[in-house]
Amino acid sequence: MPAKQECMRARKDLVRREKKLSRMAQDVARAMREMPVMKISKDYVFTRPDGRNVCLPNLFEGKRQLVVYQFTVGSGASDACARCTFLAERSADAHQLDS
Image (cartoon, rainbow, N blue to C red; front, top):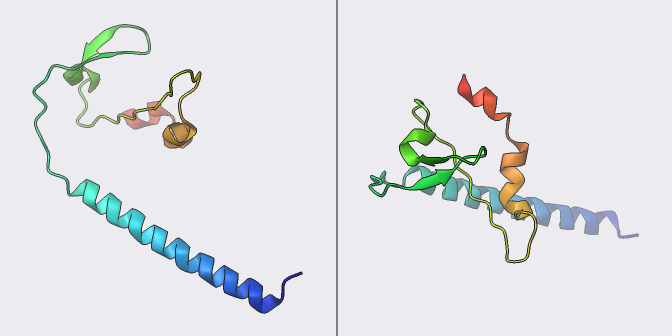
């Protein structure tokens, strides 16, 4: 069993690395918030879960904001990437966003 001092050194190193990772994530989040807004002029068409096609402005359904997540599915894969779906699977029920 490793000595207590060795465990403490390893734990302190992990804490240091966690803090560095947290600062990096905060920097990326800040950069995303500061990105300039751009006008979307192309008329994108999306397929709704019910199979109907809808253009981008109609996805808002009268709301001011729209949450969109892109899921990656590799060739031959039957499911979307677990990292891509992580946030959506752990988010609140979409109906709660209507309030």
